[in-house]
Each structure stands twice: as C-alpha cells, then as structure tokens.
Length: 166
Image: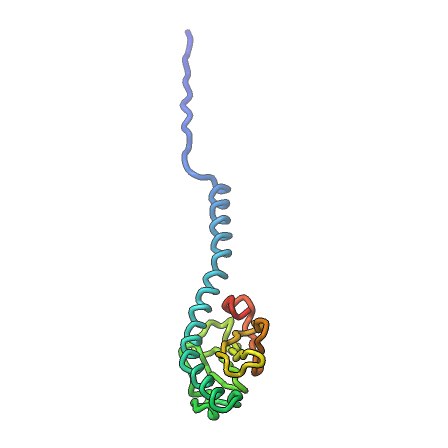
C-alpha cells in the first residue's frame, strides 16, 4: 500500500517589515530635502512686499538728489512718514539714512528673517552726478565706474537674499 501525500504550500503576498521601513526612510529623506526649498520660497515671497514698497520710495530719494546734489539724511528730510509708519504685512519699518533705505522685516514675516535688515543703497556714476541713479541691494558691489552711497546694514542671511543682493 502506497500513500501519496501532497503538501500544499501557500505563498504569502505583501511587504516585509524591512521593505516598509526602507520605503518610509526614503520618503522621510525626500521630505527633509524639500523643507528648506519651501522655506526659501516663502521668504522670497514675503520679501517681494518690501520691494513693492520701495518702488514708491525711490522716486522721492531721486528727486531729492536731483534738487540738492546729495542724498537725504532721514525720512522727514525727503518728505516721507517716520519709519514706524512705513509698514506692511512683512515690513516692520523702513528707514532712510544718508540715501540708504533700510527695511526691517517683522510683523507676520517668517521667523528666519524677523527683525533682520535689508539695505538698498543708491549708486551714482563717478564724476557724473547727473547720470541716472541705480540701486545696490544688500551686500552687492558696485559696477566699475560707479560708487555706492549710504551705509549698508544688511544682516539677512545670504541664502534668503535675492540673487541680485548677494
């Protein structure tokens, strides 16, 4: 008498614990890499408010320079409100100092640039005071043949500054 015994084996389907951990680790690494990029975009968008406000301030400084041959010492000399009255969602104050425009970030701004300053300084052509005025942002150096007027108080971290301000 012969017995024929067949053993059924069933293959289990699904993921092992190690496979799941590898997938979770990869997702965590990708998320970690994307957070700084997102932060930079948020800060850049918030800084754009300040640049919009500057478009209204720069003409007053240019007019003052054309009329008097030098740059205004402060906000009142150029006919602008006091610094604490030049505010926005992300701008705490805007101060004019010897032609430089100092933007103090605050209010609802990202914590990485809260209470940080970005300076925008006028540039003039050396030996030609009637040439058009351009502006130097942050720590930017003047091009050959131009000089920057006014102090630079920029203390915003370099990685958050627009490319033209570095």
